[in-house]
Length: 380
Figure (cartoon, rainbow, N blue to C red):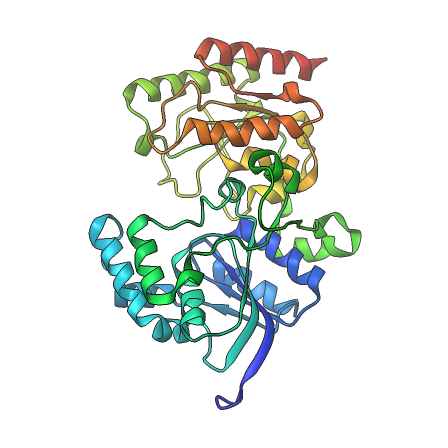
């Protein structure tokens, strides 16, 4: 491409996880636009996904962002006050960083992002600084996308810096959004000053199923024969010894009720590989849980989790209603807000046709009662 020629395209889509690809692909297919995909390789197999998507010619260009290079230049500390100061300082260089993300000769009418992720945020700030006329849209990124602007709002000091450097526009988050389940969003948030649009389920159409299989090749790894599935958290990071013991008892009781061969544990994506003896673990880490939801009859399964977004996936993207048992009311979790989780999962329960299939026990004994009822109903 001639570096001196200016190119204008409809949209830029920024991706930081496999889950986001479902919304992104749906949107670009539905909108039939000239668009580019920018992948921040924070997830396993990002380069392979980029290559498979590029081969389908859905986007004009598919680019892997060298986010490591950007971080190495500006961010040496990953947490704490020093990290916030380094992020603020990097705002002074947004134009330079933006040119490392998007070629300087390409401009977009629309930018689609899912959260306040660092890399796309810098590009948007650069557009504001350069006075580009862009529309920003948000798309589904799981549970966080369903709490109004909570997942988008910066910390207080970061907000002050943005406003000083880029103006009020940098703190305007009332942009239209595209979600898998708008009804769930409205139940949680009520009326909003922005529109909430549905993401079309392209994977439900026969002519698009081949596309899904080619981008997310699954093979035998997509078959879930077990009826009970535990979606693990990073337990050692979040739970004290007392809560780890309660969690152990939920595992042991589930195995005793269903048997080791009818129980599967799906590790957290950031798990370091620790495994409990006597349990079967899901081996195909490369497959997003969304694919498993699409490829299996989830209504005949029970999903058990402290508070994982994944338990809502079958209902949100396929309309299926598995049994769901959430543990956050009975296990204290240093990184979870029960009030926030209640707003989401009570609303999820409300959109179930069979509301009795979503349970939030408050004690271990209540959990045992809930799971025993599930097992009994499954055996009828």
